[in-house]
Structures are given as structure tokens and as C-alpha cells.
Image 1: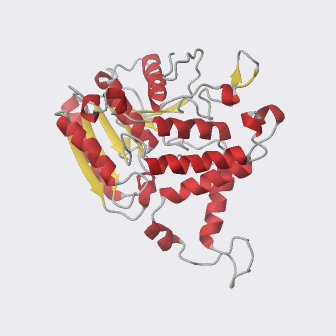
Image 2: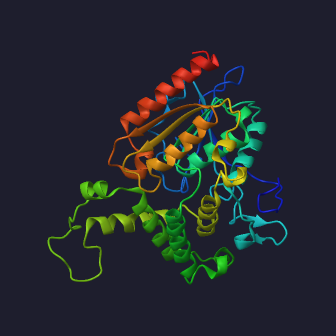
Image 3: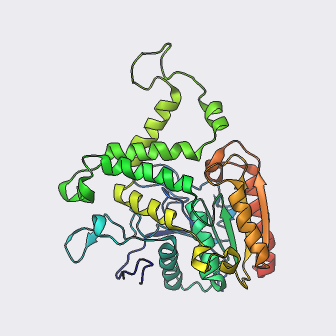
Amino acid sequence: MPLDCGAMMSDITVAYNTYGTLNEDRSNAILVCHALTGDQFAASRQPLTGKDGWWNIMIGPGKVLDTNRYFIVCSNVLGGCMGTTGPKDINPETGKPYGLEFPIITIGDMVRTQALLQDYLEIPTWFSVIGGSMGGMQVLQWASAYPERCFSAIPIATAAKHSAQNIAFHEVGRQAVMADPDWLGGKYLEQDKNPRAGLAVARMAAHVTYLSESALHRKFGRNLQDRDSLTYGFDADFQVESYLRYQGINFVDRFDANSYLYITRAMDYFDLARDHGGSLPLAFKDTKTRFCVVSFSSDWLFPTTESKDIVRALIAAAANVSFVEIETDKGHDAFLLDTPEMLQTIGGFLKSTAISRGLST
């Protein structure tokens, strides 16, 4: 498979999970695209953490992505660390983990790999492609690169290009990883090391961007953690400090540091308009795909203005598009949480799209 960086990859392994049953005419398949730190365990127990799937709120019998009606596919992205080929895997040319010898990958490369999976599963057209954040970037790439392969597209809390602010946050995280003495120039697996401290800091910094100020205040305020007074030291005096440390520590047990570098870089490079002569409407020229674009009022990582840019481009391309901004104080993470208006919006869109598709009940 050719990569956008000019390299070629072969013998790619793709790890994926499916939920529900593919119907006889193979018309009920939905591709779920995961976000930066997600994986293929969207609605099943994560083997490393033992926790439930990251989108259990959406996927299951009678839920929005109803497994009694739809066949759900979720794959780990190229460059990931949960079974799909990535930098922690063995480079056949050296017999050692790829590390930084793994080629730079893009959102386009991730989607190209998913298209190969679609071929492998013999699914001619996705009934819908859906995802939030980086998953939403994949949805937009799908709709642009393979419009004939996706009947509908649901990009949630995302953008058609990564902003300078988001690139800056990613760079802080990457530098935290690379500053860890156990990173060893990306060759830590060869020496049975792990840059845990650096990766934990990267996760902590990123996690702040997933929340809103009001959500942080509502959840934690200035409440102290398991104590009645300040320690006048650098322990986690405040609940919010303890929460972030917990997020960091748990993250390093399930995620590969080099994968974090590669996937954040893929997000930074994403710019759909650039790939179409600087014109975002051209990315969706003559599309027949039906779109439902969703944003959240308190999301400052991917603000509503960026979703509106997508919507304006789709309108300019004469696309069939619906758009909703959902009022919530949950921030960027709202797409992963029980956000009733999001569930109702997407559920209604899928039902009307199923009628247009002629999808049997």
C-alpha cells in the first residue's frame, strides 16, 4: 500500500471488532472510527484495562448504533498499538521493533487501510461512517476519498484541518515523551524500557483539552483530595491534580509512546482543503453522501466554528447536510458521554437515512 509520505507498506495487519450481524445484501454495515487514544474495542471489554468499551453508550441492542439492526465494524488505526501494524511491531528488515523507522502516516493512510479492510469484508458500501475527534477526521477523509463507498457520514466534534493551537498542544505532548530518558530515541522496546513519565505527562496535558472549564469546576472545583488542609508541598493536594495523575498513569499501561507520536503527527498533518487546491468544497465535489455534522458548545479543542466551516463547504458542494450544535458543558469529551441530544440527533438521522437507503427493518 502506498503511503502519503512516499513509502510503501506491505503485510499490514489490521485488528478489528464487529458487533451485530451483516444482512444478506450487505447494506447495513457501519464503520466506527476511533479517536486518538481509542481502539477497536468500541463496545467490548478492553483486554489491557478490563474496562468497558469506549462507546458503549452508542453501540448495542436498542441503542443508537443498534446491533439488532446494523453490523458495526471498528478497527485499530494504522500506526496504532492494539494489534494493527504500528511502530512497536517488528520491522521484517531488521528483526527489531520499528520505533522511529516506522514511516510517517496520515489520516489518509488510516482510511486507505480501512478501505482494504472493507474489501476484505466484502462490504461494497458502508451504510454510514461515524466518529468523533480524530475519528471525525477519518469520516471526512472517507467522504472525500471514497464517496461511492459511504452512503452517509457523521463527523462529530472535529475539523477539516488541525488548528495551530491543537498542533501546539500535540507538540508539548511529544516533547514530554521525547524528554523522558527512557524514550532512548524511540528504541525503548529494544532495551525493555518504557518512557512512562513522559507519556503520562503528555496524556495529562491532552486530557485538560478534552474538558471545559465549567466541567472541571463542576467535577472538582478547588476540592482537596483525601485531606482536610493543604500539605504545603507538591503532592496532589487538589482533586483535579489527582484525577489528571490517574489519567496519566492508566494511559501508559495501554498505549505505546511511539504510537502517540505518530498518531498525533497524523492529526497535525490533516488538512482536507490543502489536498484539493486549497478549496474545501472541492473535497466534496459531486458527493452523493448524506452528512450529519455535530458539534458541542463547550468544545474549545474543536469549536463549533470549525464544524460550521465543514457545513459551509458541504453546502457549497450542494451536499445533503444536517448540522446541530449541542448545548453542553461537557467539552470535547461530550461525544463519549451520555449526551441525550447527541443520541437523539444521530439516532434520528440514521433512521431517516435508513429509509432513504431502503434498509429493511
